[in-house]
Image 1 (cartoon, rainbow, N blue to C red):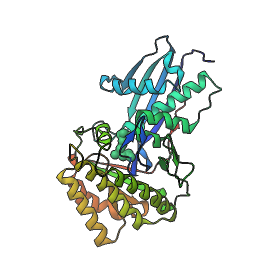
Image 2 (image 1 turned 45 degrees about the vertical axis):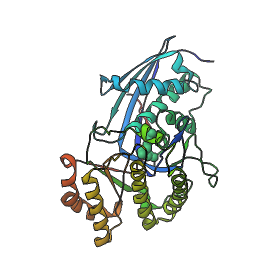
Image 3 (image 1 turned 180 degrees about the horizontal axis):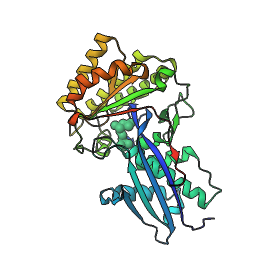
Image 4 (image 1 turned 30 degrees about the vertical axis):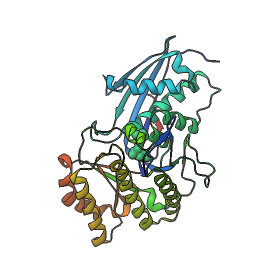
Length: 346
Ligand code: PMV
């Protein structure tokens, strides 16, 4: 039975960066292909929800202490979908207070951390109200997915898989799972330095991009590519195969952008400096024999990837050659993180 009480909880959850990209979906937010990402350590969202009994439900959303109406539509849609599993949403007013560690409008997607933080808070509150409902992490992932597909992977630290493959029985389209292997040390302390090329809001949203995959001429080929890459990446993560990783990470990133360029209507998110950075990274890898590579999200920024042991060699080159190509010399330095945390006494 559901009791109405006033209660609050606070969770801090990470953003993540995909190596095998989720691109294209079916209703409701189920992926057309499997994806793998790692959770970040520094790029996080902290959210506090205070729930007060109210027959009409409802919510208010504050980002960094200020009302942010522009997010209301997305949050309302998410709450509507989530209330089927979390009935407290229907009879509580939710005061949602969020803040991000990464600067606003730097082109870093915040939806993965934002939606996973919301999902943890709501599942925790539901558990407080109806203790017979355990705080089940697959369920939290599944709820986070309803807000943003990539958020499903932000409920754990380390490397995570989302999307069903018959070869991996524990995998699911509904929720993410940690990759089902022991990750080689070379990938455990992996870096992701985000080279900010342009921080403006992107002209085509992820949702619109996913939708263009419905009738994309390369749809079936893409689904097969992502499936094969997922199985291979799991092997590389286990064996520490950096060469295989680099080849695949870059091909995945460029394939994502190639899909955008070949959709109807077609569009480009890359900027001239995105391509210059890619060239510089490939040249440095070749001439210095250092296993540095890149990936990209649905945007112009370049994510520089490398194992921890090369940090020193990379930092001087990064400052001299890469930083001048970044908007306002901006680089956000991050690495594999430990995952969500409940904040006590907030
Ligand atoms: O979670 P969404 O709907 O914002 O989609 C994210 C898509 C990519 O970031 C491009 C890839 C991914 O798997 O995170």
